[in-house]
Length: 239
Ligand code: PGA
Image 1 (tube, rainbow, N blue to C red):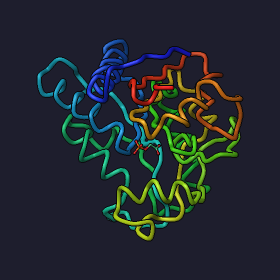
Image 2 (cartoon, rainbow, N blue to C red):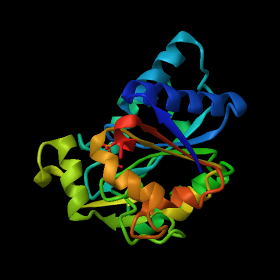
Image 3 (cartoon, protein in one colour):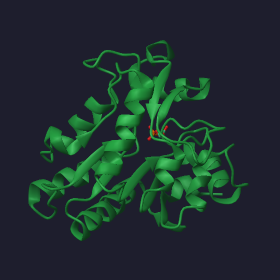
Image 4 (cartoon, protein in one colour):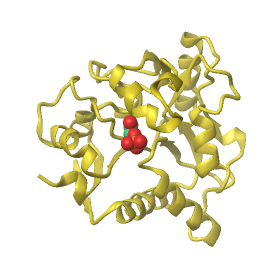
């Protein structure tokens, strides 16, 4: 696992965008998995700017969403796919046929099988970017998720309901269940990148980097992945 220390959030956003741009340069039709949340927003801005300036070409890249709430309407304002579309996929001009996203209304077994099959049909994931949950979750793989787990429907932990409340107003506004790619799905990605910023992530990042490897902290998956990078700013890495 490679650790990239950045000065601050802006530096983190630029460095993570550069890594993604390099991946697309190496493989223009690469399959990319991207997260939502607060952390990737600066990276999305940098990617959108690179697309607009013509310094990156996403015209053949393919995208898979990392996770989604379940049991909400397809048009629900909280749908994570809308968030990713608005912040990145629309600005860089990605058409529907190059996106695989969980349908929040779908029957779980069929939907998770569909997403895994779509990834396999595209030749697997080239690069997956993930954020770091305050409880160590990766996507909606909550503590206790097996490292071999595949895409599935899950119940959010109280801690994730609390952290997701920041996006939608209050805990009562956060859907109780979700779809997620599994830790095994992410482990199969040819490259796995974790981004973490700010003092709020300090404790969990320390456990991720230095604590026991295992399912109690799903983010420790980064340490067993053959080609993993953690990009974190100084505030998140401070002792
Ligand atoms: P954040 O979320 O980027 O909003 O901190 C990360 C996560 O919970 O996975």
